[in-house]
Each structure stands twice: as structure tokens, then as C-alpha cells.
Amino acid sequence: MGKLVLFDIDGTLLKGSFAHEQAFRRAFLKVYGIEAGIDMLDHRGKTDLQIVIEVLKLFGLSPGSRQNLYFETLEKEFLIFSQPEKLEVLPGVCALLEKLKSRNIPLGLLTGNARGIAFSKTEKVDLLSFFDVAASAFGDESPVRSDLVEKVRKQGWNPIFLVGDTPRDIEAGKKAKVATIGVATGIHSVLQLTEAGADLVLKDLRDPHFIEFIQ
Image 1 (cartoon, rainbow, N blue to C red):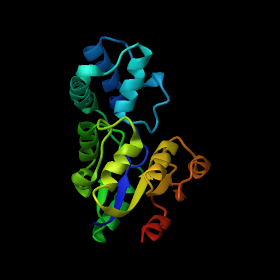
Image 2 (tube, rainbow, N blue to C red):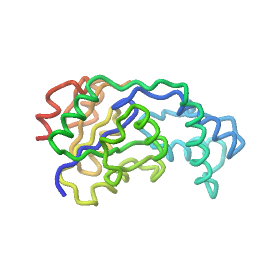
Image 3 (tube, rainbow, N blue to C red):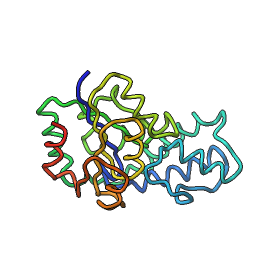
């Protein structure tokens, strides 16, 4: 099927969303009756499903039959909390996506965000139209990030380039045997992403080495 570039969202395309954190807290209370939030974990780079499983485990619970209801509630609460929130697109993102589009390079999302939340965030900042949803994978589909990469890889894309801002992004890409690009626009440094084994590490997506690397 040819070349594909997969992008993480939080810390890679956009600054993190506080509304997402609020939605987690409200959904835990509504669906499972617990006062809980993602601040109870080292959650950076984890999928939303992995976060839910790990938080519930702290309370001796599991997602069980209420998992689908949880994600429906999470997405509804996110829409409420995100209405007044101004999401910030990170430096170089828009210009890079336009350049890749002009070269007819297919793009997908590989994100820990649940599908509906990923759509809401990227649509709000006019980025969703850049991405092929069928060539994407989302954080409510598996607790294991490398499974998401593998799901897309099995569609026949080759080569695949995975772009992310955390060591967990890089580790998932390496496990799925795709090329990895670390971008230090989240909380992790160039050194940390390099030590995680990224094939290319950039300070941000304004760096022209991105285009050179994927050609």
C-alpha cells in the first residue's frame, strides 16, 4: 500500500488538554462511583483503555461490562469540558501536514486518545481532514500501544513512520518494527527520546530533517 506516517496527538500535534483529564474524573465517578483521575498514574504515552484499567485496579475493580459505557461517558464529558477550552497546535505542525499532503503522503493517527476524543480534538483545530481514519488506531481499542501500531501495519502499509513525543510511543513503534520519530514537544527531552531508541529525534516539527528522513 505504500508509505504511511502515523502521528500521536497530545504532545506531538497539540498541547495536552485539561478537559480530557476532567472528563476522565467525571466518567470514573458516573460509571464506577469512584473519585479517581489520571493524576494517580504515570499516564504519559499510555492508551486511554490502559489508563482506565490501571486506575480501576487501584480500587480493586476492572472495566467489565461497563467498559463501553465508560468510553461513551468519557467522550460526552469531554465535549462538555472542552467547549471553552482553546487547544494549541504545536510549532511546525500545520506547515508539515500541508507539505506532506502536497506530496500525497498518506497520514494516520496513532493515539492513546479514545476515537471520539481524538476526532473532537483534531476537528476543533481543523486538523482532522489531513488524516485517513481507516489508516488510524485509537486508545479505546487496546491497552497495549504496540497493538495499535500492529493493527495499522497489518493493512499492508510499508514503510510506516511513527511520530510521538514519549518513550512509550517509541517503544511501541520499535516493538511493531516500524520507523520511529521522536519529537521533544511534550515533557520528554531529546536525550530521553534518543535513549528510548528513536530512529530520528527532533526538537519540534519545524525541523526539515523530518521530510528528509521519510523520503
